[in-house]
Length: 241
View 1 (tube, rainbow, N blue to C red):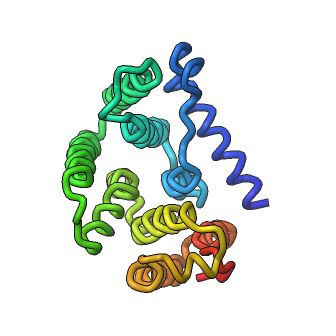
View 2 (cartoon, one colour; view 1 turned 30 degrees about the vertical axis):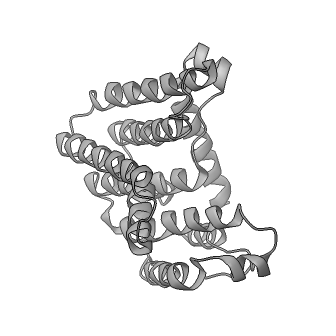
View 3 (tube, rainbow, N blue to C red; view 1 turned 90 degrees about the horizontal axis):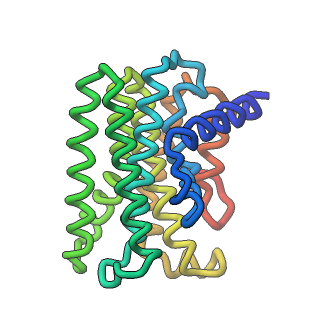
């Protein structure tokens, strides 16, 4: 019943998000923006866990979702070939979603949130630029960058609206899920993944330990949400953390 209720709340948020970012031409030509399932779960984690969730909080969460989709749209642009209609539409989509973000936060009176999120967006853009410029980035720096890109906007949202206790789970899970997904794309079997993954021992294991500690300390979180977090962080071997 708990997971069923969570799914219903997530579906309602997605419907609200889709209405907020709808653009007939962009939706027709490149499709409706789809929020990442893992990012969405942590963005809504306090609401799903029964915390107070106001209309301003809801609007702020939609704005954060628009930020992530703007990042995604711009990431899909081929900087060496932006003359095609498809590429130009992706640029326009990212710009449009950025505009939606600004429209939404303009209706929120939480000026601290507006300031810190804007700073975070700027920092993430700098990190993404460094990714393109520095092909020999050290592994530790790369992982820190992944952590920032994947979780920092959600973290700023959680901190700004009084949900600080959810931050450790978010900071550990989102980069971990991203790295696992990135590695899975290049291999076919679990054994191959464990042999080839440059992150399996050096990076994933410490992140798993960090997540396990966060889960242990999250006695405030509903059991079905803990179960869902464990499921999404289960690597190819099928073993839970």
